Length: 325
Image (cartoon, rainbow, N blue to C red; front, side, top):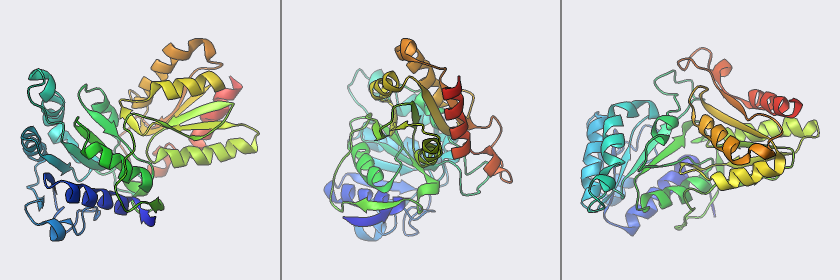
């Protein structure tokens, strides 16, 4: 296997998909010869031509509207929204068109071949227009799938699954891991099932759940807890729509405690859904309330990113609160 960072793994997945099926196309702002603002699409236009990897106007609603049209005709468009913060002009297209195409037609037509890629989250000192975590907005939308990888191996396998899944997928890439996360990745095609969580670390005292870049944060918090003699079980959701309730519930029934670590602001973030569902499913097994380590309920600050961030220390504090309850 080759050593790849997260960006290279994504590029490899796109390359494999485009080689496999000539109905796969990649488009978005600056994704052509420039290779995208993060270079995730580098070399694809040169290899597959301008008709299959091309730039679009700077209009997110138009990008997704065009992608919906292509997908409805049986193609596999991969639309890039340059930053997750820029996805909101396309909110109407994604929520009212992409997600509802199959339903409103009685399964006569669909846009299941559509994949929307977007980098999201903080950690690069980008300020509030380049650092938000908007996954909860879309997790409220039946008809979509939402996938968030935590490392290069997952990024390639999950993206290939997303591209050829029969449902539209929002594929959210933690941008602070683009070059920081490096690992072994097969150069050939492989897939990872969507909607299935992974138990990253076995433990017996408390379950800590997260997704994307937060898994590294949780691992650091678990190391601190281990010094106190606390055994932490870490679960990476990988997909948050649908999310793997059974795997999380099984873990919580074993440990009796749950902490959710998320980068997004605290109020109404996806961790609230995890907390509510596990409270319903595992009430008689819980030894303490479900705890959440989150970002702050403020616009994402540029100068105080470190203070805003839901880091390993905040997550460790929630682990202690859960155990001390």
